[in-house]
Image 1 (cartoon, rainbow, N blue to C red):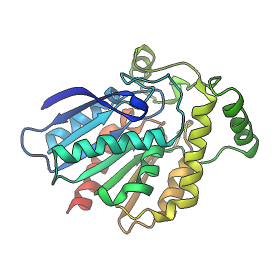
Image 2: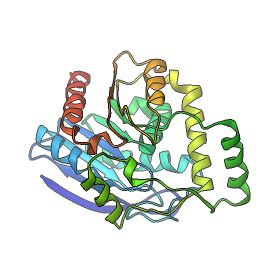
Image 3: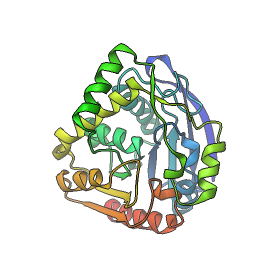
Image 4: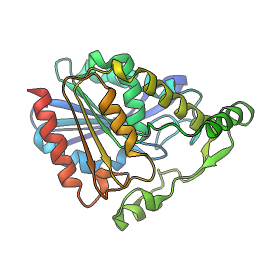
Length: 275
């Protein structure tokens, strides 16, 4: 497979890192990976190593404020900066591959971002894979507190992800802890508030989604409630849709011991969507 990495000018003049992997032959489809909170695009080699030999190209990038991209860590001005960045990158990908189907593949916060992206641009895509999205709204007190702090002290750190919650596989957790591109600082009030705004939008507009949709979620996910994925499945208007909630699996189902089964389930469904 061929690997390329470069930068493109993203929103707010941010130097945005991207990379892609190509199969030996013309790809049958493109997976556009949208990574999760405080991580980066380089953590998806399980997806790359599974799908590229099966004829897919895999494109990914680092969100503003994440990984190798510019921007203040664990902070965002507005949620739309995430989806606007995808649009810039998608247009580049479409220019390079004018006739190849593109499937958006979002995990965790990336699943939330991807779902918001569908509300604006699903007509340009062929399908979507959403993994472990945070779609269950916090309680009203938490939401109000987040709104106030976002206005008064937007930079203040409020929440830190517990690495032990991402996977039952100890080597995955240790790699996450040791990864210099994973940001273990507390997540800012502004970013958390913007995430809540993204959740609210999905909750109110989810029925507008009609694209073929595959949803996967760990049944023992402590970071994003599986009920959010069930809501997405139940309320999306897609004629072709499927959901797999895996009993006992943690948040990163693509990094769990059972990941080969998860990847196979996704591949089978994508073949159905594309044919």
